[in-house]
Length: 351
Image (cartoon, rainbow, N blue to C red; front, side, top):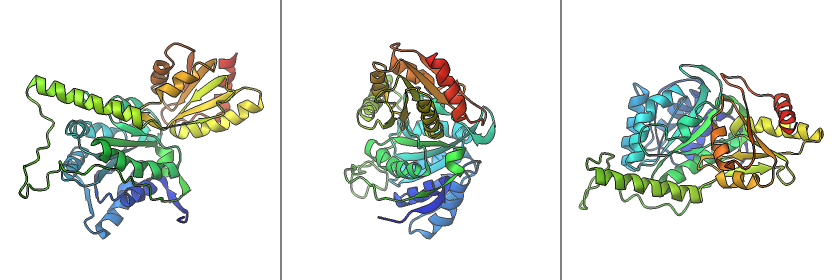
């Protein structure tokens, strides 16, 4: 077993990508994720075949990702909220062309330029496509630096397995805090051969990578093909964590940093006799609908806690499907819910 090292979240994500054989990074600086491209700038040029390029804009960066992915490279970009917004057209092109790529979003408060404090206000952007057209991103939401490392490495495998872009989404706390991490070899051995890449025909039939389908019949079939892929992802890739759900009468649903705070709140609430458990989505898409729906047969109510004005709560309500009430508590703009605040909300829900 490898030794644990103390690393900041952004730098740990970058190192995890390198260890997952990502040799190409294209990005543009924006806080609070700047340590990630800075780490790549130091490390990638020292690796055989490694390429780091600070593009002239986010738009340029994501289109460089498109080109590198089309040539078969493991490639990543990272940004924060408004930077991701600028990349969304290119992300839609990448999804439409069925190219594997990893995108990291260390979320800042918004809307607009917002602030560098932690937030979860990009949930809709990440899970409802993140751009135009019928497409989805696989969205992985770590709640620790160690999990950010593990999920980043797994993101490259998921991207290659399904030929699809994958987003790792965190917030300023995940990106900036330091925790001990261990880098494990978790690479998959069942990944398909990249026989579709554009690396020169070399005696074979040429490959064409494109997201343009002029005939409506062709575009419709392509969209249904993508839809079938997303259904397969929903079948195979759902990840979640539950805690104290065995006898829970209230279920908190929270992800990322907020789930860590919720765990402390659950301990305090149980000490006061409130039977509460946690359902933590790790994949925001595919969303753990089934486990939440099943929990609705057990608990009396749900409390969704987010660092937003209420986004994931809509998916929780869809999953519950009217079986039980779903309440919401949120802080936004960079404000963080405290365990005491969550306990007070639990008392209101119970009352």
